[in-house]
Image (tube, rainbow, N blue to C red; front, side):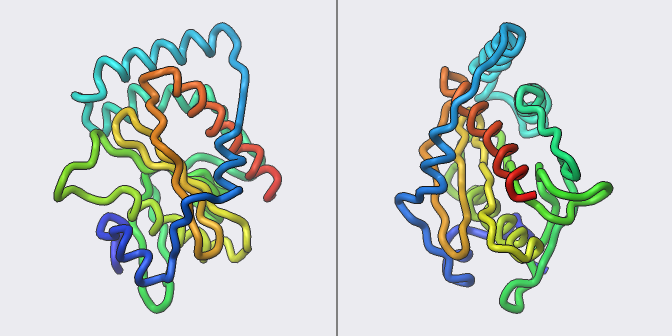
Length: 208
C-alpha cells in the first residue's frame, strides 16, 4: 500500500489523470461564504488568532492542532446527523490497481466508530513547506481520491490543507480540482476561514 504521506501532486495528476483548474465554480461559490459571530465567538476568534500570530513560527504540528485548530473548530460546530469528526483514523481504497491509504489528520464523515463516507478533510502542517519537505496538497488529494471511491457517488469532495498560519481550500470534482489562495488565519482572514468551514456543514447536510 502506498501511504498518503508518499504522494506528491505531480504523481497524483499523472497516475490518475487529475487536472488542476485555475477557476472552478464550486470553489468560487464556497469561497463566497459569509457568517456572523456573537460576542463570545468573536472574543474566542480574536484570542486564538493572536495566539497563532505570536506562535505560528514556533509551534510543532501537535501544538498547532491543540492550541489553534481545535478551538477554531469549536466555532464551526460540526454537529450533523449521522456524521462526526474523526482524527488519526485509517482510510484506504484501491484506485486503478494502486492501493492508497494511511491515517488522516481530520475527516468529517458518516460513521459511528469509524469513517465510512468521508466528505471533508483537513490536512495540517506546522510550518510553510520548505525545499525537500513533503507535499501537503498531494497528500490531501490522495485522501480525497480515496473518498471519491469509498463514497460511490458523484458528489464533490471538499478539503483544506494548513501550513502554519495559511489555509488553502480545495474542491475535487470528478477528475478536476481547484485550490484557493492562501488565507492567513493570524489576520482578519480568520473570519473568512470560519465562514468557509461553516459552509461545509450545509453542503454535507444537502448531500445527506
